[in-house]
Image (cartoon, rainbow, N blue to C red; front, side):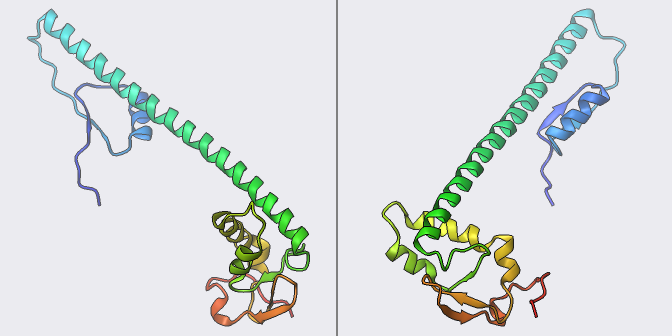
Length: 181
């Protein structure tokens, strides 16, 4: 549990709408306190108080604006990366389907354990270790691959020959799929 004190302290009443916005964008960081109104404030003191309150509201609005624009930029960067990674995955998949048509087929086949080592040795020049690992991670985490990953299923080598069978330890613990009979 976080026991730190709030960082943004407002010493005046704000509208409920602005308070909700502050709570959305700055959760657990807004502390609204009110001071009792003093009847003996001079007009100059009231003006200074109002100016101070206006500055605090503007600071809060600037923080909200900075946070929302940062979130938009982060989402755009994530979307660009997602599109780029998807294109790279498709490119690697098409090349591997041409080179090894018996292993990378549709429907998906289970790949042998350690096949990444063979791919690194036999891969074309444009494939880096990182690119192959990223491809295999996405390929092996796909829904169709996980669906056929059941005990007793056959794993294949790059040439399409049978390598081994899936053991009980290799099947993920939380399975929702039943083996085909």
